[in-house]
Length: 226
Image (cartoon, rainbow, N blue to C red; front, side):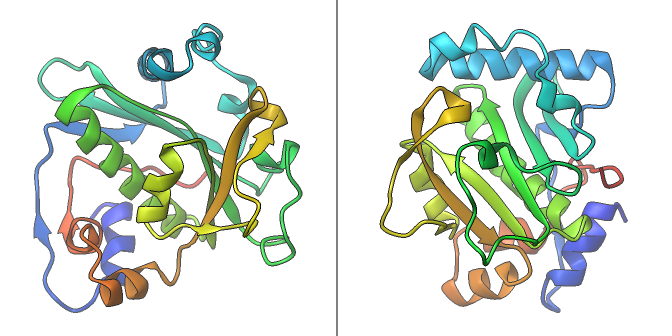
C-alpha cells in the first residue's frame, strides 16, 4: 500500500475501500521536467484570472525550493500534458507564506501547519477533477506528515470552494483582507483541522466523503515527508 493510501485507511471507518482509476496521475514534482510542467500549468491557469501576475510565473519562485515545500503535479495518462498543480508549504522550517501578510491567532500559533498555494488547473472537466484530487492529495500529505491544520488564503470566488470543504474562518468577521505578499489582492484566510476531518465529513454526509475516505486512487502517489 502506498503511504497516502495507508494514511487514508488508518483514518477511514471499517467499511471496505474500493479502488478507482483516474485519467491522470498526481505525484510530487521531483525533477526538472516535472517542475517545468508544473510551472507551465501554473502560469496558464493564472493567466485566465490574474494575467498581470501570470506574466511573472514563467520560472520557479523562491518558495518552490523551500525545505518545507513540495509541488504536486497532475499529468494526463494519455499524452503527459500537465492538468493541475499545487504547492504545499509546511511551517516546520520557515513561516507560512501568508504570515508575511497576517499574524495568525493564538490557536494556530505553534501548531504544525501547511499552506496550499499556487493552485492551478486546466479548463473543463479534466481540470475540475484534477482540482478535487489535488485537494485529496493535500489532505493525505498532511496526514502523512503529521500536520494538524491546513491553511489557505483564498481570493473570491475560490474562498467559497474552501468553505464547501468545511474550511473555517481564521479571522471571523474580517472577511477579505489585502495580502501584501500577493499584490494586495483581497483574500480570506481559512483553516481545516486534519485529525477531525473524517468524523466531521461522515457526520455531515459530505458529498466528497466516499471519494476522499473510502476510495483508493493508485494514480495518486505521494513521497516521503518534506
